[in-house]
Length: 376
Image 1: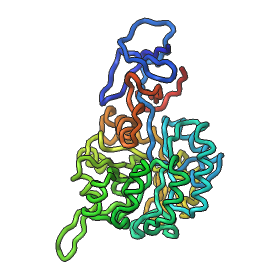
Image 2 (image 1 turned 90 degrees about the horizontal axis):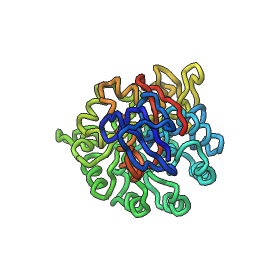
Image 3 (image 1 turned 180 degrees about the vertical axis):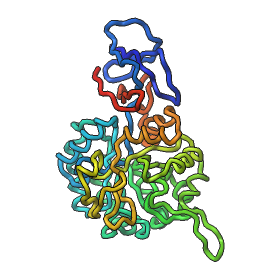
């Protein structure tokens, strides 16, 4: 039995002091009032939360998961783990299917030995609306094709946790039905969908919008009549979850506050959407290529080379923590959106909280919200 003491526990939407965490065999056995114990692990008054969960990350330190190499997997995970991430979903942009197969084969080989937990893969594409491609390579974007997704799910369905797509391209929700039947979480992304498309997908089991406000449709007019887009429909549907890229660039503070005000912290997951420049500075990497699209680093964010759109972020989880709190969101809600909410989205029953029976997977940070490394 290990006792973690002298800490501020951030969990369940509150901060609790004068309580200790008891751990045995990698599981939290109880959270109890503090008692003197010379053998306890002293956290020196720092904050402790459940381990941060990253739903949407492409890479870091010059690597992306879609590169399909063992080195890429290990370098990306090492970097994000050092910034507080404890669980991550490896995200692949739209790409050549041969490259996709290679990346999935590599993941299958290394998944159990990575520096952090990677429960599965998030496929972001290629079934997107071309006009909403953003930083996705238009060369690979098209409508859902049975001859593509059936074989890849038959072979790698046990590794694919989530698939983002444009619902307006999914006739009769056939692709969505196939995802749901294979326990793959569907998500709306890079889409020009209107209310009817989103509602139909929602009723069939699609309860997540990928990076709200980034390549997600808004109100349009047809013959003078207004039609809701993804953004408005996500607000209207109480049980729809949304991602928010809280890097301080993709969403200005006031827009981040609006999302959280409308949806609540229990329906918003904070993500980095970091590409291969993740965790790096403009001095370390001034530009590069992500998913076949050239990018530059400028103003603290990755932009397409022609500056017409962002190409993803360079953020890490600790930066999401700091920037969300700086935007005026409470620490309790910020942590919830990085732990409990993403766990609920992905059905991780033993992660996201500090409570009896949950995994002893923690992130520790100080009063300045800097990550503190500790061992127990």
